[in-house]
Length: 180
Image (tube, rainbow, N blue to C red; front, side):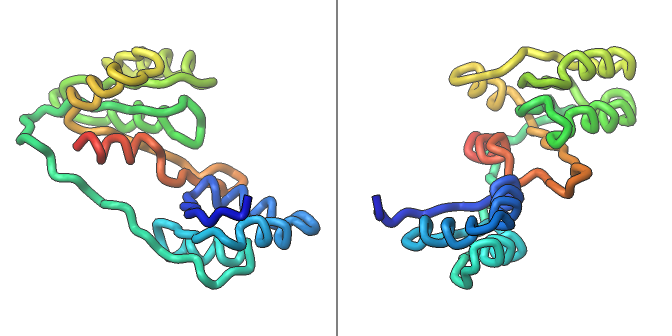
């Protein structure tokens, strides 16, 4: 409706934008569609990629906060929380492998919250590796807020897929920063 607005591009957004822009006529259609949009990205490289994909030189960089001070000191060992889809790009299997390498007593507990195609394999892997992980399913609203408040750290592993796609900025990262 030709209303100016702000578009923030992250990893997955940029990956798909680059692929879409390769289609005949798509770049000019997207450029026209977003001609009144302010475009920002969280990093210089991401901003350049968006600019190239859309043929624009005015994509700005708007870094996100790198950390938020905790509201209270926490004691060790930490309670760890994974929030996200159980999909290869998110790397929850990598988390289990890393946790299994920690010396005993390095963490209090691990909650792996979410759902997805890897769930049966993750449960089996946790059992095989001897990682005491809880799988409460998808957490929403108060359940998610409680899990974030009870955690010392949110852990967000990821991997580069064969086609080059990488994880951008997961919503769980923003939610955990907002929760402190």
